[in-house]
Amino acid sequence: MLLKYHRLVLWLTLLLPLFCADAAEFKVKKLSSKVVEGQYLMDAEIDYRFSDRAIEALVNGVPLTLEVHIQLRDSKAWIWQKDLIDLRLRYQLRHLALASVYQVVDLQSDTHQNFHTERSAFEALGEIRGVPLISQAQLEKGRRYRLSLRSSLDIEALPLPLRPMAYVTSSWKLSSDWAELEIIP
Image 1 (cartoon, rainbow, N blue to C red):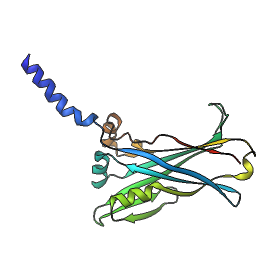
Image 2 (image 1 turned 90 degrees about the vertical axis):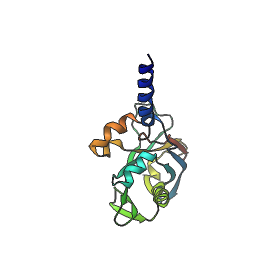
Image 3 (image 1 turned 60 degrees about the vertical axis):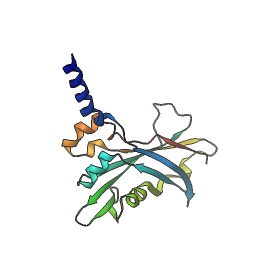
Image 4 (image 1 turned 120 degrees about the horizontal axis):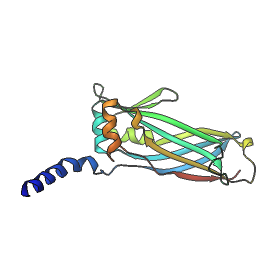
């Protein structure tokens, strides 16, 4: 009986780190839109706090791909009705060990920025400015629309050997809650 108890304690000790969450979270701090020359543009600020496991992978050469999901729909639309906008912006965070820099890559435009610190790369990654959404003429005056945004780590973009662990541990399931903004033209 005592031997079974020790085995159980040993197994729990080995498995516990796999299921414990570190202080990792993604949080949309700001979401706004403005009209510039008849076009709605969106700005967002996202606070990225990665898990220790994700940062360890990043520092060891694993690129982390993030997806920012943007939706615009009529506030009174039923769930089955089509969104006016369903846009996914993709970014990649890399650590270049030889150059000792962190690189943020905008996968839409294939442009990149280099940063000397992890924190400055996370902050730049979280600053989204001037994303064109929709023409002002396409929205009906006086009607209410809901702009929604969520950011998440794309587990499918991880190297194949990492994916099984990423699917079962909370330290890899990184996603913000939906942030919403009402737009009334």
